[in-house]
Image 1: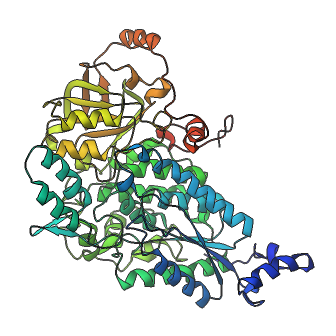
Image 2 (image 1 turned 60 degrees about the horizontal axis):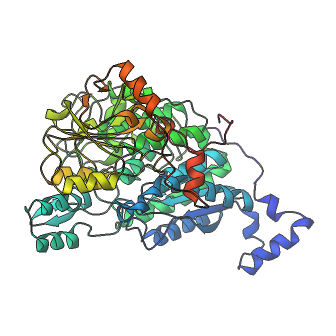
Length: 567
């Protein structure tokens, strides 16, 4: 991209007689007059002591600051909140993670505009922090580079690879049916998460960190370099340098995050079998970038791009295996060679995506299969519609057992995650059942809780090839099995899922992209007349009450909109 210059935004706080008080405040913190003449780069650091994926981010932020300084900029670090989805799981704390995505974007906007940063390095890692940071970058449209904290090393137990989900969460179900002892469960607790970093499988955090490379807002290696490795610090340092270079060249997020860039990210998503949450997050990021991304695009690309990786929870490989096999660049190179990517899209490197991946190669074809020998001919995610989900539902089809791709069975209806989880653990769910969990959508939850505990319990007790689960909530990236989420419209908005009764026959056809309840339109209409909206689960002054009032459907990314404002 041709170099171009533009006046530094930070001059609004540092230049001229009227800004003498402003400069004095900078001097109080140890900045020099020379520092105030350089591009001022905000380092948005999501470090905290509650998320394993973030516990090491101080080091990465420091590396990014060194990179900024080396390139002739002035780094200014500020904090960003973050929630550990695993710790928030299976209680009312899970109402907050998705809602926190909007807070993260809002807080970065607030800091960047109030202090007039010229550019940003966004240092995050886990589930909602990554998309929240990207949303902020698109909204602000100032030069920005995202750098993730990297994946955790793979755990081991009894000589076998393990991780938090395909190991410990599922072990809870195994313990419930007597397959393992409490002592063994405790041993697994100590081995499932052996290092800092985002949980070792292709769950939501790692999925989004991988997609950052395809979007072009993250550097090559962002998705798979292990968190404890020195290469991760080097990547953060390079991110700092690139942020300054982007300010000098005036390359902005909306130059990078085009519709083609999103299509590239979706193609990668389908190839590697990423988290179903990527649908929510890509739609939300596109919304902030004013890119007209529609739900149908995911399914269109899924029919063309095969699934060539099987990472936990859908398989036994982890992010470390993908890293050693050549990383995301190797996957992208295969896709580009077959014309499945728009390789001319500009990235934060200043080069095109094609240039970034030109030297990549697959080092282990067992981890990254050739496109002519995929696990499945279709991609990892499918969009279902039908009388139960007129506005769509999402399933990670790459993690569904072949036996469950087409299934019909009686509905077992629960109006909360807790009710469903207790029924599963008490062995009240039978082979063939379809568990329906509703009033857990963006508005109704509120917050659209992840259903990892129920889905892991189903897998742990050995019913993942016999029982399906559908919800207007969502799933962890660690969920496997016939788990269909984001059912829209949601129950609290009067969607058809609110009308389902115990024993109704649910029909699932993933290859045919259908999700129906076996009822006539007349019967559904009659039930709709009888239905009344339940009282909100959260009232008063809570942030969740405001979130519930403003959040939109999962089918549009569950973004918050001002009433009457379509954008």
